[in-house]
Amino acid sequence: MPYTITVLGCGVMGTAVTSAILKAQFDPYPTKIIACTVPSEEANLKKVFADNKLVSVSAGVENNNKAVAEADVIILGCKPYMYEGIYNEVKDSLTGKQLLISLLAGTTIKELSIFTPYVAKVMTNTPARFGCGTAAIAFAPEVTEEQQELVMKLIDTVGMTVKIPEKNMDIATSLIGSGPAFCLLMMESMIDGAVRMGMPYDIAQKSAAKVMEGTAKMVLETGEHPAALKAKVCTPGGTTIGGLLKMEDKGVRSAIARGVEEAAIISASFAKK
Image (cartoon, rainbow, N blue to C red; front, top):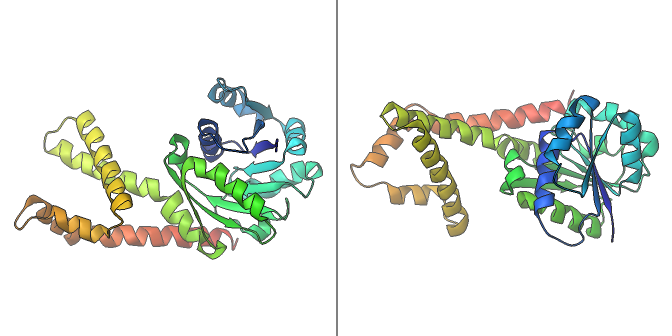
């Protein structure tokens, strides 16, 4: 089944997902990918995909309309506030039968159905560019089983996908979409602590990153509760329990949990505007 993907708004997330697709192998694989952007970003986007003949870059309203008319699958990767304007620019090129994969936060499936009834709403994150991202997907009722399978194959290239009801998408926006920034703040803090005690920065950065990577892998592969794994590291009177208690004194656990909560609340507020 030959098909063309058009990426409308190939910014950070659109580029990340496109890059992940290009690095993967699955069937059916797209025969063509058209990355759409604004004229001011055309040269930069061409540099990003210069080594891949599957991808062509389109810029400007006229060219982007042609790209949409050619599409079987549309990946919408613009800023959330821009989707209505983009719709008005390309609506005459929409067939009503195309499959829309939206990467937008704070927009509902109902709102996105102006493009097509066949909407898959995806929340992923920036590690998708490296094939180690996470994605949550919610589908409109009109999306067929075959279309769902295709979306799962396309988005699974980011690393891992989970299927969720749309009501959980704001939580996914916070945990998955904003999660890398939360993890990076923790990583940065660990690096700062190590540097404060005399470790060279480059060694501290590599070590902290690998510690977080290894810890995540341990949780995924054992399936054990993080608290159980944490307890195994804590020896009586040792360094780990001392450090953990100092963090608990400063409210680190609550601050992180409330941060996830606040980001989800903000995501939900976007849809109310």
